[in-house]
Length: 467
Image (cartoon, rainbow, N blue to C red):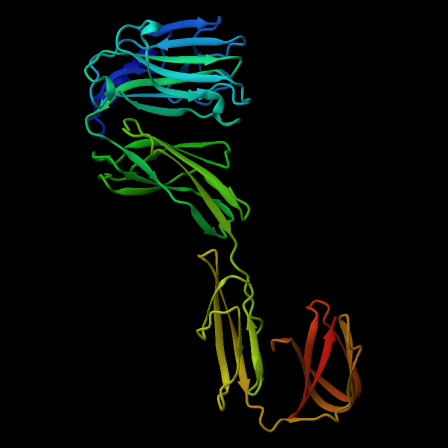
């Protein structure tokens, strides 16, 4: 059954007429067959008793395999190991031939030093002494602790054009990690296919909650990637558990064009912080894997809090100061001002209600808009009288105070405003002789507050200090 599966996979790769990567496959091995090493392969131990072996998907320490349910593996050697797994002969290398394989660190803790993997080529025989060319070396113990994902490697074999070669995977360690190896292939696309991830750092305003990460894929090769083509996409956040999905190209992707796709597995943003994100794609036949992985930051910011206060009514000869807060932000007022605070005055003879708004922008893109209605009224003819029997106790105050009204008849309006002219309290009282009223400024900032008392067309303004 496993043999049939391998033949079917090879048939699909070779005969896929609608694919953008018609290929000549010279080697395809996923270690699914019961025989190990596979036919034509060679395993050699130069040091230590352990040798390359085949393990199934239930083997501990490995994440799901890139292909099938088996992989090749070599364990660590307590006293030192030097173990080789060598391919069959690959005939007549062409200019576009590439070696593609997957590997994973077996033990994700550590690091245990030293542990390295070397990919070597022999143009003569499969004897160890003939592997004189190293085309890649990988520091296994340098892979971050806790990170255990299958890494896809694509290496050009163009240096060996016209030659017959053998390829060796050499693992050297001293009581270190060990590795897994899977889906080893040598093939040549008829046209260079190159999918790349296009991604810059991201700034988001108030993104708290669940969202599906977008990923932008660009065809930077010379071959069209046809609709329904699939690739493996991976994302991880802050070196957390990778999310692996199969994404589909929805329409023909011509060279130079790009498409935005979305992962279906969402991520939960819970804080206004910077998240470190890794994207990776795996497209079979991709001629260039250097642009298949990106690291970028997603910075999460809150919107600025802006409060111009409640709508207010003031006399035409009184100015008002509006403060948008958020020092250091960018300001855009409806008046044309660009400062944090503005002072407003009524033009002579101009009365009525005017809407004043401000846009406050932080982090170049997080913008909040707030507005206030300011009504200037004509106070001509309103008499300010000083002989009104009104007293405030205590003054200064820590918060609570009393206003005593003596021998006052009728309706009285009491308005308390802060230094900006914002009315923070307003109420109407019906008085009949002596009366007092309690007020509380405990929830307001320390400072000087104005108390305006209006009776018919008469007003009196008192000041109280809250400390």
